[in-house]
Image (cartoon, rainbow, N blue to C red; front, side):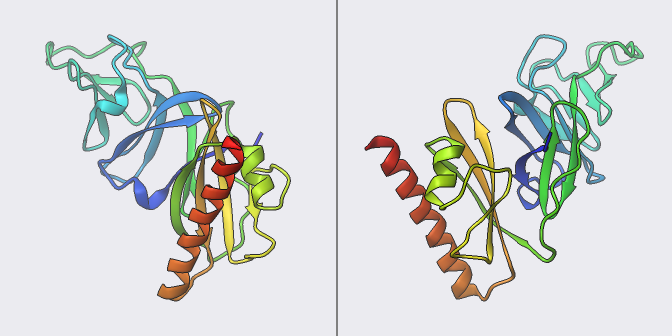
Length: 203
């Protein structure tokens, strides 16, 4: 099964952490100081606090609640209340396979799957949320629902839809390198698509 595009690489700098969804599964997505990306179930194994509220220290993610720290492999590496304790290996965050390709962070909830092949040379344009489902987004683009949408009337644009809970879809948009004015026009086009999709939703 195709992995889910959950974020643009540029939107998760080293030390960044954010809440994302992959096929309805809520995850904490974060990047350590070394640049490695990890995606875990969005709950601390200790008390269930959302890890996306936490903070990155080097190559560890610390829970906001009690500060338990987890390494990029998910295992607990440090418990502040017991600094001399070597935490048992059984204390670990539950993770998903995460990879970067084409300026996009992909997550495979069901286990490793290669990201789809995309044209070379694409660059990130933006991410935006549509208040409609993925099928409606594809239809507004003149296409059938698919993991990658190539707009027939705008071949420089590629849309990667990621369905969210509640019948919404997050779209990550890539484009061929464009002059500044054309990039602005491309952003306006994505806004027009969103308005059209959401207008159909409420009609």
